[in-house]
Image (cartoon, helix red, strand yellow):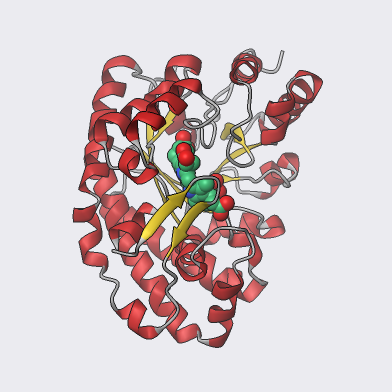
Length: 348
Ligand code: 1CP
């Protein structure tokens, strides 16, 4: 019998079956206990910077479902927040930031202040690590950040929405300035993730949710290269911590992304055929994914068949069961319980 946390075994290249499982956005609005605590906290940034409450919401889904990983409750936009960019989360609208579009605004960003301003988040990580060691000894703690390109999308456009026209235009019109912004984000991300590791994170995930909006040369320059430099810096400074990359909607570029960035795991989005990816990504790199979050909302036959299809594709190689994107607020909590039963019973 091999020992150790299943998530860490898989990310060191071992095949573990049934695969370890966790769900992106596993803490959040689909859980009544989250909604209650969120109402107490007031605004979302107050929740992310309150170590007692942020640790509590991280643990809520573990108590219900016993996932193999806990993911720090925070947001990818806490890096722009720590850089001093004005940010608020408007009810029903998502994040709103004061857009950064010129050299003066980029020059004001100072990556050396990020780790210190993010101190409350590091306090959450260290509380979580203590709680897991005590109550969930086989659950691994995931720290995370957005990748530079995806974070830049919000910083330049100032809001979500999925198209990010101002960001894409800036990258075409003024690649020198855009490269400066990406460089600030690379340095900030490395410092921010190193601080999470020092506080107790055991795995790091880089979310590149909007990687798929770029043309191929942009994908190489703004997604693959910055991620490769971040991974190289972290492998040098914190060599024991595996990294999972999530280049969402990267299609056929996923295997090349996995190899060129040097990540230990790669997360597949909903549109990807997991059987194809399981064969195309080298077996030394774990694949993670990729049930459609809407199949969990639907439940019934869609949930049963979808979960089995993903499990079948993952069998026989290092793999982590997850969704293809975050769980959505209208997900019935019992459907998540059923999902975990199917995974734990090896698809039976
Ligand atoms: O009112 C609320 O409760 C706010 C909703 C919410 C939550 C629960 C937001 C605002 N962020 C989060 C938490 C969060 N975000 C986590 C930790 C929770 C967990 O996973 O258990 C994580 C890892 C994220 C990461 C995140 N934030 C991403 C990358 C993953 C993805 O979903 O693609 C992105 C793109 C964001 C930006 C963001 N923050 C919040 C919203 C609504 C959005 C998306 C905005 C948009 O549509 O563009």
